[in-house]
Length: 199
Length: 199
Length: 199
Image (cartoon, rainbow over all chains, first blue to last red; front, side, top):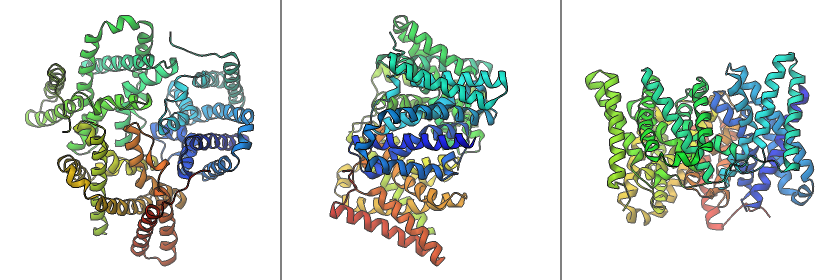
């Protein structure tokens, strides 16, 4: 599980970079970049913790998250051009990130005794609502309401995890397999232009 | 009180329909419709529960709410035209809904030992803040800040309930009477174009 | 500490006035003015309380805050012209307010056993996030993401307080000195047009 912790921090770092970049694009100042970086990185998990009643929220109890976020925001502001050339790497870590955040959020919700359906929802909230809060603060319509089947990949991956971990009683394998599913769906969705448009 | 539960679910269903319709109007995808439907239906009660410290929030503990919301969103997406012809029925259930949500939210707040004034406020939050959060997520100025005396009807109905339930020691009658007051004020406000404009 | 309580209420009053004025500028109705006044005045502290798990949130437990806010909103709506001539007085109390809110929020966070870094953050959230939520509800880009080093003054003042209260073991002096620092930075920032623009 030590690996999961490191991937969690790496995902947090990449989310913070993307939040801070969004702030720079909108001509926010350094404080705005910090807030958007923080919110993008931990906003989803924060909303989940508040809704399920697990407070103080998670990142307040392990300062590594805050350090990684501040590092991400500084990296984003100092190496803007360099980062814009890394967009495939960022996409990769962002996608691994949402996969992992989904499973970790799901597990935390289950551990409080809530139902599996709520756990899948809260896993998805952990993964995608940081971006929603970022867009709301930047006064824009949240991207995920219109594009890609980003959230659907999380809902699907969470369901796979639930079924698998029941069936095979191997949490680690179930987690890895469902994270791979999330990544595969997201990559395929981007490549094939899948969407869930309302007709 | 079994009746109240059924009306509560019916109100939730109608709120989910109205949230999903708003999403379709804005060209959101199916996921966006689900989020707006959910937020419109249970956003107000969720905010109340978070503020008064009653977590996990209510709808996580009774999956019927979630089922009713999903049914509402699907209904909204499949029968768009049919629903647009039912606008008077929808207005009716929406209005009964805010009346009932006000009283239920007020009772829950009182049951935690908070003061009656806070309880009236939290009853109103339960009834109207789902719509506020929906509008914020859709990147629009919340409708209730400008139109109808929607929220005022809830504040008034909540106050009536408090006074009556003290005076007559009959909770059921007090609840019914104050819900009827909310409905009457709302209907009159729409018919007579009442408003609380700042001069 | 009785003085602090009175200044806290005075700050709350001024914040409520500024929220209600913002509502009037946007042609909201009386209910909208109440919501914006309330949110501007206690939104930051409410967010802090929800994140650190101190619920019911603070203003629900002491109705004086609510009374002061309602008084502020009414004052704002009745004496619009008079208030617009008092903008220097309002600026002064607003600035004292954010200084005090920072220290009070910081102390409350520390008292729950959270780390000093989180406490400085939560102090700043108490002081500035009421304005952020006000701007989000009014469908505008939050002012503090673009202007003045408002939040930075709070982060700085909070840090000073932490260091001083450790060094001299005199909480009252540390609080007063750090509030004066927040005021000085804010006033200087406005006079000298300091900013933290991203290049």
